[in-house]
View 1 (cartoon, rainbow, N blue to C red):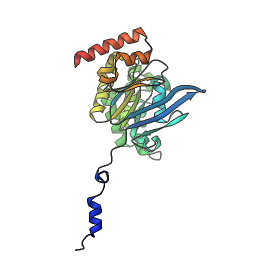
View 2 (view 1 turned 90 degrees about the horizontal axis):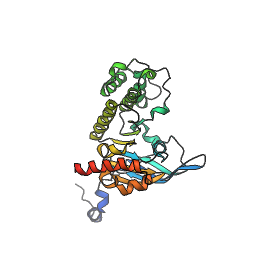
View 3 (view 1 turned 90 degrees about the vertical axis):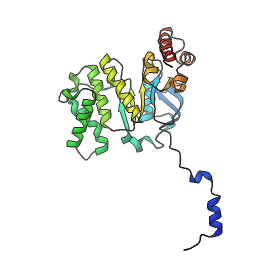
Length: 278
């Protein structure tokens, strides 16, 4: 047996500790110095946001604060005037298949002649690639996702024939079919019935248990502490971001909303419930 030279053994013994330590995982989301402008008018300004681990994140702020724009900027759906974005330590294009997206209902052409099942099957395309067509396995997955949101009986229905809440459930099923590691949802509970809101909430909780990251644009301050374990308060820039119990405070909300009384009354109600539940 060959003996290790003395100098090599000494080098091993004195190797830096970090060389033998597993490299830390990159942030789930890393937004650095991002500015977005429409027609030369800034909508987001110098946004910095780092999400170190999978969380159930509520993105909250007044109308026109740039909440939807932030999601689109992270996903590369709008051009950046400055800054950079990474997901799982890589450029977004490199991890596109790991990302699920539920857009606002208002941004979808509901008159497009496509069935509910076809819409959910679209969620499987990223893993199939453009040259392969969905087969039995993908159809089974799509039907399972529809059943998960209570829409299995509507698989052959034209998407435009559904109610607003039903349409939202279908798009949630499409996102589930993507089998993503991170999900972005743009106001999934806006304008839906109570039953659909419950379906959305249960789905968010399940994704969180599966250690998925979920970032949700949300408008109802009264339910923020109930739904989210992490919150981003946004008004063109990040006012505060962190665990909900630490960040969702009267002071931070006043800075975010500028003292709008009705909004702050809703927040005060939520804060009181949050404190009583501790």
